[in-house]
Image (cartoon, rainbow, N blue to C red; front, side, top):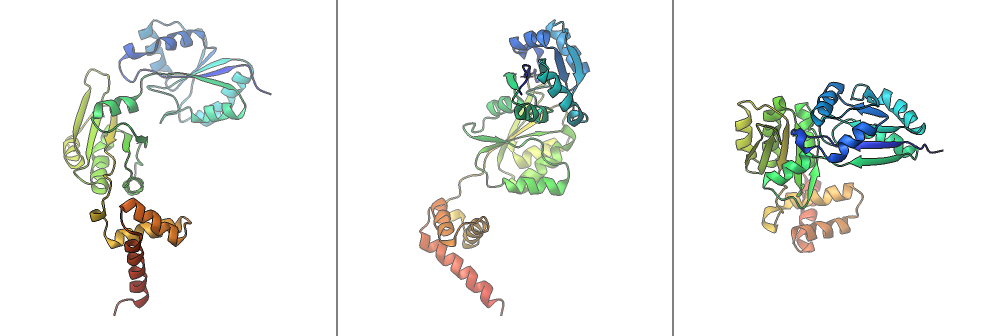
Amino acid sequence: MTGTGTLVLAGTPIGDTADAPPRLAAELERADVIAAEDTRRLRRLTQALGVHTSGRVVSYFEGNESARTPELVEELVQGARVLLVTDAGMPSVSDPGYRLVAAAVERGLRITAVPGPSAVLTALALSGLPVDRFCFEGFPPRKAGERLGRLREVADERRTLVYFEAPHRLAATLEAMAEVFGTDRRAAVCRELTKTYEEVKRDGLGALAAWAAEGVRGEITIVVEGAPEAGPADLDDAELVRRVRDREEAGERRKEAIAAVAAEAGLPKRQVFDAVVAAKNAERNGPK
């Protein structure tokens, strides 16, 4: 049985409260329950918007998200209009909300959204980098080894990459990106978007890492240019063999893997085949 309530995911300003969508004020006044990542920030927002709320306000943050989700789902089942807001931007995008949305979907409950400002799209637009294709990677892992591993997973990604990062980890993350992606890979560090001290720093990753080492404050979004398309001259035999083996390990037959790698590299299939055979013979014979 589905409930009659509605879950409303509301985007909130990422900086300037004047960017709040008009519907946000209406939904704040209308909601039966307002689930907020930080109730104090919610209070400041409603004061800035001149909004008077009548619904019950509850906290909904990373620490209580799992425990509070069933309570909010029950409110929805009983017919409540539940409004979910986070400190900035859209709920569930690197913020609390995913668990509640998933639980509401599972119960067949109605879900809608109030679109609002987005740090991801704003940074992309300001970066000066290609925006026709991009992927959002959220926050990189905090531990150095895990961070390098995650970056290596997308080292060959040709789409523009977007990350969030804490200011005290920015320098270390940019250094890791320079190590994995190359010091000359273009990037933009967008700081304090839509706020008084908004700044967009555009340069190669190596130069940006050196700049960040002096210390940077504020909310940070990093936009990184995608990997350049490799031409035939960029791929040696070892790289061709590696790509074929990666495809084989993923379940492709060798013949199909060789054909696919040859097509990617713009090379004759025979050239890739010869590289694979030579590598196999070298392994078989071993050092002498």
